[in-house]
Length: 167
Image (cartoon, rainbow, N blue to C red; front, side):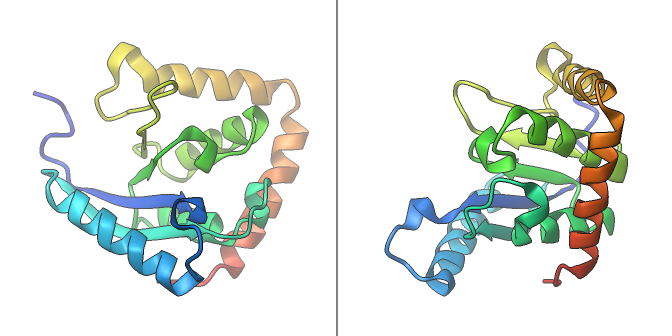
């Protein structure tokens, strides 16, 4: 039995609007909410808390308003699982990805991360091959190279989280 079998996961689903080309923001949000609400209804112990649709095209997380709102909800304990179609929707590059992982596990050490990407599939719930521990080690090792850069990035993200709107 997996340790998470009894735990309800309140998922925050981050996605981008490229999948709904030609739709305006309201239509994109409606499309994603409906699609993921139906999807998560079928998965035991999962509850979709909200869908966070990035429309800005920003590379830095501290400039992505919906990602900041998701992180704020994580910090407030509303979300304990971040799901995304690909790792690229979580972060645009390796540095941002390591910073993102470090921050979400600082916000909540029990946070789960899932991607559906075939090439870089992440599922810290199943935790095959100790994936969660390996990701933590990778992010810690990377950040250790320049802890000051991470701390500066984190200040910007935290300021954005404070300004982020709610559900």
